[in-house]
Image (cartoon, rainbow, N blue to C red):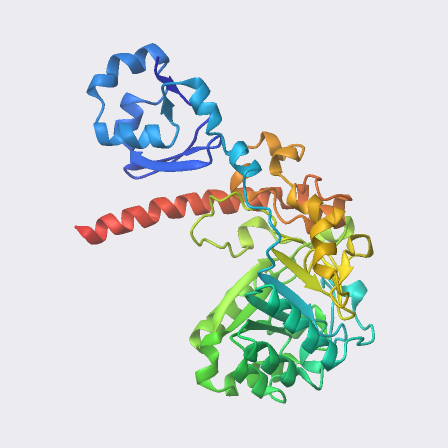
Length: 411
């Protein structure tokens, strides 16, 4: 008997149809007219009758992606839910967000880290040096220097040099207030992310930021540095019309650009989310790997006192794991109840998400939002759901566009 998966997401454009199988988390593209004539809506008996006439190449594509299949038991064993269980959950800290300070020279209304700001620095340079040595020893690939505002530290250059001398990639997150005074830091790091949402003072949500000075500093910065600097806009309800202006400024002057949607820290802040039609969607190649959260076991955040947290967005007392200055920190991290909680997170355990046919493409979204807004890591992130669905839809369309573009170029 030949079976057809009935829960298929179909997206068509011109002469192509993309078929996404949620159960297998696989997608393929076929000829639109051929699919509608031969496969769409056919029952098992009808499929058997046309099997001998089906184009063999198209047939193989459908079999390989679970659109049609011969054996129900074999089909079920290939479900993506089983692959999730088998994924690598070993402790392997590739990325570390190192908060060298929690002091900040701005007061941003939407800051995800606002309740941790302006604590006294508790890590000396020698202690940070020891932390970097420990991270090198376990094979960490990248350290992202953040805060607070990291350029406020007088020894920031020495910290960056230590990371680079340890052959670990180094990225700097900064509000750029001090980039002219600390320009040497930009020379040394591999990448720099500068937060910039608008040039209009009337809607500036970052108290203390001199927008005229930032713009002038960026225009006078050495051009040979600009290709490793990315301007990043947070798109909120207030600034949702501004990111295209910042993007144009960035690209015109040799900078890279990216954006992120405003993420609420509590239910009250949901009202500051942007209109879905006003956001800048990331249309890079879609991720079919399940969008797993690697917090605690693939990446960590280290606070300004050495305390380890699951990620930079979850510096919460209730999620404190251990302190990297401890001799047995790595074992404590590996055996932590919190680490194991993140290891076992699955979109299949999230109410509402577990019934969604694109759940493996979005993974339920960032887990920091439901934790802060709805009170739990496995809660449904209602305020982000429509954004996630729109992003997935447009990314799937991007696959069709890319295919058509390659075919047009081949003509």
